[in-house]
Length: 358
Image (tube, rainbow, N blue to C red):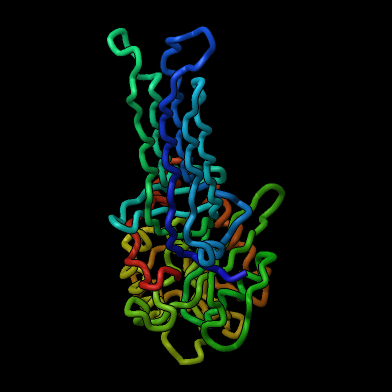
């Protein structure tokens, strides 16, 4: 199924049913009085987070969703039936915005989270509700109110603990396949990964974290070059970034320049991404001598004033990745609840695509 992380839709709640104008007609009861029942409430529309879904593809096909209208009231004080509620399942991590105001309506970050996106209309009143001591035979009723109609924009942000970033062909997909059961597409040309790939990294009994691989970034991504910043929203909820750097870059780019390029693109997309912890993974170091690797480490720390962790790994040698995944697991487990909430905050996103589908 195609990965779709943005969709536009129209939701229409049901109108409330109208009240009934009726009088009791019974033999030997000449003044039976009013017995018109109320209408039923209109059905509402809800979004529900479902962990079984991982794409908004279904909302690319169907874009209009309606709840049922409430039934009209009837004689003998019979109330109209309530309109059926409409539940729309969406992937966990979906954000719902109003298209008119770009206001955030709801963030469905956990399985089972529910948010009402269109409220059903209120029922109308039958003439029995207007009976009084001075008005024994009211002929007044009220109609149900209209249900809400809203234009929505859904945006999916994948929920993962660690995000992989780097230039194209840095070895991110190979690394993901080496530490998890994910099988992303791997080839020796740029932009092999065209959509986010998620894998589960097992570090031992009952210890695991999720790792998401994004398509590679290149200089000028903020202006739409390459795949642009299209998928960077999926690492806004991560707790840690693995910045994969190719030490034997085919274009002979200096590793410091590679790191600066990615740093600049992350900062142009969101200041939040620059505050996330970022660990450097110098990939393909199996092709360098130990002295060259040590010199490279020193060069990076001096040129960038880098004080964070730097790991020397090789995606084709899984044993070199054991330390980094172990340290990542310990880091994630060590985060306090307050730190986790701070790292998963939601930002107002960049303007959406004109066609409504990413």
